[in-house]
Amino acid sequence: MRNALAAFMLLLTPAIAAGAGGEAHLDKVDINVSDTASLQRGAKIFVNFCLSCHSASYMRYQRLADDLDIDEEIVKQDMMFAGDKIGDLMIATMPTADAKEWFGVAPPDLSLVARSRGPDYLYTYLRSFYLDDTTPSGWNNLVFPNVAMPHALYEWQGNQKPVFIVDEHGNKKFERFELVKTAQLTPEEYDTAMRDLTNFLVYLAEPAKLVRYEIGFWVMIFLLVMIALTYALKKEYWRDVH
Ligand code: HEC
Image (cartoon, rainbow, N blue to C red; front, side, top):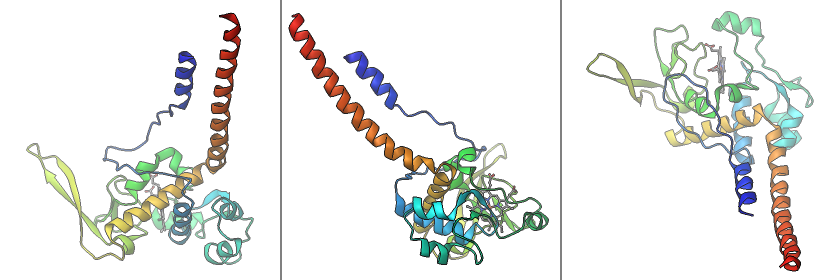
């Protein structure tokens, strides 16, 4: 019985995920794709601030409405571009060729970015834009140096400048950000919004997770009942043997 229990516990051990990311320190983000309200808020931010440049070309508006429990009418009115149909894929408004000309690189499709980069990276990236007059866009990013993307949410976050400390070897080390222009949101509100957006990007990369969690719950209940039954059966058999 003890061995069986140990094997069972092993099954429960979550796989250790290897995260991507550069040298910059990444802040941890608490992701929960069962938090539908958070996913709804994240989807709204994505549609309003990201979908102009970035596509999510594996996702249909219809599925978004179904999975995230958003009324189809609301999706049609608030989240879709004029002319799009509810069965359409989420394609950016900006033609790729134009975007490439303006930014030098085409904005990547974001369907799978949460899987290639990991949630901590995205959460930190979205909070690490800073003003830099040496780049073409006037923006830079601590976790993606010389990024071609302008800060899409600067009005929410406010403009920030990094403060570096220089150690005795002359190496610059990032210490903190300093706000140089007031923001529409408080830092806490902005962090929460970026958690919601990251949560949405994680869902986007694997919408089947929602279904799997639900099935997983019933599988666990089934297994627990089976363990109890098997144990009772074993006791019953051994009563005759003794
Ligand atoms: C004005 C156009 C534009 C908008 C709006 C925009 N992006 Fe980008 N984004 C870009 C471009 C261009 C790149 C490519 C950057 C590069 O490769 O240097 C990019 C890159 C990225 C990357 C890739 C980073 C990496 O490490 O590979 C992520 C993630 C991303 N954007 C997320 C977002 C999110 C989330 C939003 C909405 C809040 C958003 N972007 C809004 C233009 C945009």
